[in-house]
Amino acid sequence: MRPISELVVSERRVRVEVEGVPRWGWRAGDTITLDDGSELAEADALYLAPAEPTKILAVHLTYRSRVEEYAARTPPEPSYFVKPPTTLNGHRRPVRMAKDARFLNYEGELAVVVGRRMKGVPIDDVLSYVAGYACANDVGMHDFRHADRGAMLRVKGQDGFLPLGPELVPASDFDPTDFTIRTYLNGDMVQDATAGDLLFGVAYQLADLCRVITLEPGDVILTGTPANSRPMRPGDVVEVEITGLGRLTNTIEEWDVDLAGPGEQLQVSAQTLHVALAIPEDEAERMVSAEGPAPA
Image 1 (tube, rainbow, N blue to C red):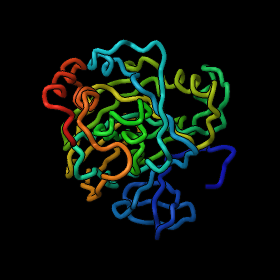
Image 2 (image 1 turned 90 degrees about the vertical axis):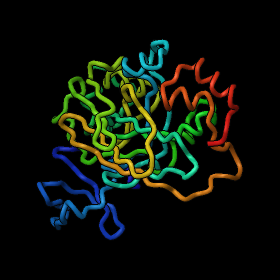
Image 3 (image 1 turned 90 degrees about the horizontal axis):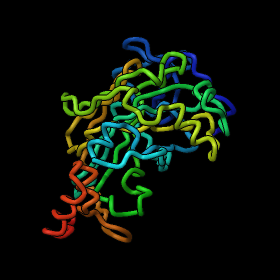
Image 4 (image 1 turned 180 degrees about the vertical axis):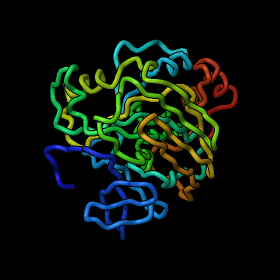
């Protein structure tokens, strides 16, 4: 990937695959116009994530509704984890679920795409370093919740576990302090929150991160999910909608793969039940103790 010194977004941008090659353009009605002036029908477009990051950083608990749902201690400060760039996925693309897994959860989120290199930027200035915003689904397979000692590499880091899009909306066209986010599963609304539900706002998260990590143009920051993340099944259609950013749509597809072999195996642990289904920790422990940690 060619490094860039600055990412400037002055209009809504889409990224699509044309004959196997990623191309940038913009959408107008039923047509996508590519940067070279050529056009294609939007209905036929193979969307890619509208970002080319060096890294993807995501936050743990940051919505009040999710803290309350888990009856968790309110975190005094945000904490984070990393998703590889290979997790990126596009609008209308399938999300693959291993055939023996049971707890593949949606998490509707607001994604921030960095525009200028950020390191030690004061909180009052960080939003001016943002290129744009997009809808995101921070997919997690909680059958691996017992693995990786909290880093969540296998939970959140699998290929295609970050649908992003459908467009990258310029920072000038979106207010990260005033938005509504909703997630739909097969047409039913399952998550609903506003920016006012955030314990740690977008600017706070960016200023916190760039104290210790250099954020490069194109990097993606995932700002958290509200209450009611729940499992999906093959054939389900999940949509994330944020006011002013559009609606990201993906279908869950069974992945005929054998994950047996070296390393941790799929398992229904107490942490699986607690996080994937929002079951209280003590109840989840009792359920697993009674039945034993059965394979997924």
